[in-house]
Length: 307
Image (tube, rainbow, N blue to C red; front, side, top):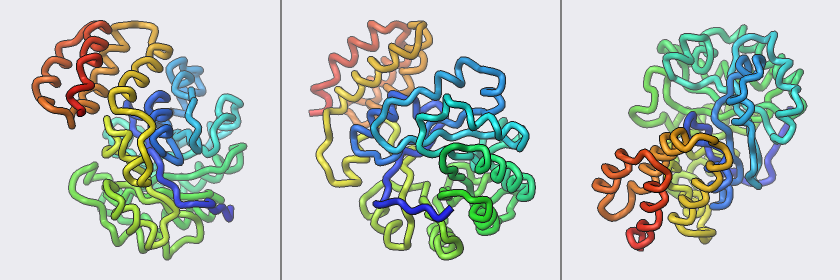
């Protein structure tokens, strides 16, 4: 598909356990042009998983992308379900390095068998009512086949691709191979997104200069939605403390159990406070929290720490 974006895109990358619907909405408020869900198992969706269905909630005003993972072409037809209809793109994860994902032949393992991946991606494109994208890595098992994989994606009719220029074995260690993005842009005729180590306006400018269509911001956004405003040089819509409050209030409508909500939100709170005064002691306090009251009382005390 000859798809082109009308502007350079700064996106929130998909991150399991991080990019919940509330965080996606907040990042969009701070300037993210595109937001991507946590990766969703299409096979779990086949079994009407209630958790999976809840993950499809979307309230942001950005370009909306739902990321799925599966390796069996026979379940690709599930992507036509109307519960995916509010997304603008449907993305296939072929890059997750997590052992439990790879062991199940998903994520980065998709790069081991390009012929099967071709069948899966072709079926996804055929069945999807929305444009399809694919996210992948340099390779797996020391086989750096990202160019071959990208060309296959293009042949299947994918609208854009995203490269995280580390191998599966690297995980998130070391640094991305910047030269790989240039090679990829020069090798395909569909938009290429850069994912990995984007933390400054200079990084964005470089990605744009080599012909990338956009960048995806992952770990640098954790507890730091302001990065989107900084990268675009625009004012922040509200304070960090207000972002924390909004995140919590939105999650209250998602989690029915206080215990589950607190256990989940504590990790986000730890990320949010990492840049504040006296962060170490604050983190120690957060680790001990077990009630919503404790969380809310801390948030009330945070404002002075960010001044």
